[in-house]
Length: 151
Image (cartoon, rainbow, N blue to C red; front, top):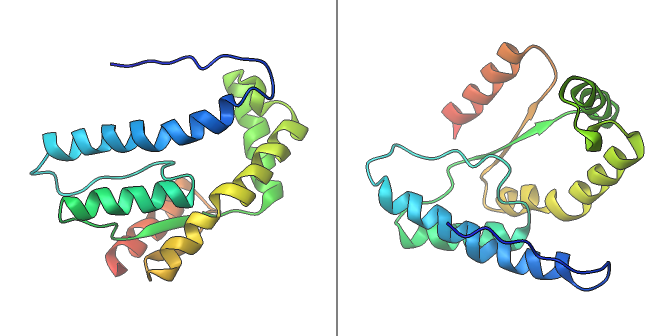
């Protein structure tokens, strides 16, 4: 196992370098899992890919294993609801990044700028399915199952 701390002052390039490193390491870990689980019926990628570059790398890796993404399910939730959910999670979990609305807003902005493009990437392939992320856990799960069945 390789655990890395990338250290330096603000502006040194830690974030820039870690973004480059993430594709290589994460894709390597996924490749190892694919090879170790050749009889698996499939995989769920939770929170990955986070950038278009990662999505392209994942597609290339899966293609090398004669596989592909079946469907990318996007859970649509209004921004105010997201903020309220994260603030509540912050109270329950003690996570400081979920206890400050300005910090949460910043994270949502980064998502919109850097991650939401993944939805467009898979949409262009006809693999994107957006579901309503509001409702009970069971209701949302039912929508996810329906999206999978229609894929």
